[in-house]
Image (tube, rainbow, N blue to C red; front, side):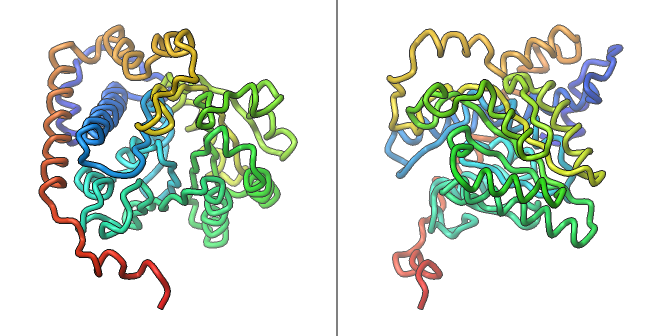
Length: 338
């Protein structure tokens, strides 16, 4: 849906902006979160039908973090997302068809069908392609921010980090580099409680991962990663701070990975009571409640958004499923050095 179409659905009522967000902004956030959830559920369905191969990594439960943080960025800013950040891709401007073609490994896709994970970048919207060894992106994001500082372009870089990634050397080296040079970069930890099957209690001894920022000389903030308004509020502060030359920040979003590490993983290692607790904090349902209580989106207009999202997702996948995969020799082009 376009911004004007979404604006037409907003109830014309008295509304005091929250965290600097207008009624139209709040409805737009709902659109992107619902779009992400619907798109990913379609991915899970295709995987179970045998129409996808490889890993299928979903961000169910993380939508408020990926969408809310990315919504703070300007078009000129640089985004470095992870494998669970399809919502960040969409919020930054990645077309649905492009993402569907990529994940289904089609020849028309951004990587020409040579890859079927969300590793693609998009230079036109300043999105960097993900490296599967996730920690390796931390210094890359710092490098993008360094380039911005050298060019005096006032671009801000944003990179998403997993809680497991925070345990490796690249995390400490990359953040230290960013802090020493006061680079315009914001690091977002998606603390979804498990690094694959390893719970937080076996990953680190501090109460919060954000506490590590103090020793590096940058602000470290913990935020409820299931509340998109709160995610936006804190991240907006960090982005503007970085843009004003005050250096990097580390934001730890407390959220939950509501599915397995990948769709092949039943996540039997997660206690049922833990999932039940986090289910009550479902980020999409939370925002629905806000929009209802604030009187800016009636149930009937919300249903219109949901139906339009279903239609857009179905159209993207119908197109991608009908698109050809690359020919054998073509699939190997530019993969190996001559």
